[in-house]
Amino acid sequence: MTPRQVLIVAAAAALATLAGVLVLDAPLAEALHGGLPAWLERTFDDGVHGLDVATGMDLPRGVLTSALIVVGAALWLAPTRPAGTLAARLSAAGHPILVTGLTHAVVRTGGNHLKTLFGRLRPGEALARGDLDHTFFQGGISFPSGHVAHYAALTLAVVLMWPRGRVPALAVLGFVACARVGRDAHFLSDATMSIALAATAVVGFDAALRRARASRGR
Image (tube, rainbow, N blue to C red):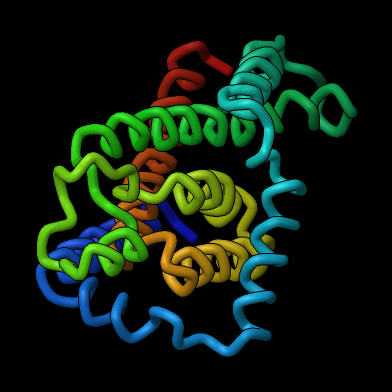
């Protein structure tokens, strides 16, 4: 996908967030609560757990982000190598790795601050209270989704910079978003807000690093 197309994804996700908060979140949460077949619940739970292990979601906070930024920066800053060599391919990998790390850092760290700021209850918590109309500023940590932020940062970087991997990347992101919403962990708008943030950040960091490289004459 082109940067323009990824920004369209960001805009669509932002509109979905607005629609979710104003209209869709409450009825969707009520419809999904306890309404999934047992096999689908197991598929969601086992699938997300496996992906969490595979992608480093379960690592201590900051470890994955720091590793991506350090490795990506080291490769990105390395001197230019002759084309076709292993060193040249490693140097070229620095850009997407660094973009991914920076996006992950901003979306995950920024998302955590937004969680505290908005204090939104999870759907299960709101349903337990019997009040889906007052979910914000209640001391919760649901908005935006940290899980979806993690996967959106990784997969949207793939979508933008490794186009051949866009289909499996988007499939992973869609699965995780559906799982988190379907299992009462998040409202629809929690998931779409994370996607909007990640899509915007990945395009911004990609453009900034390309300009920085051009200014260095690389």
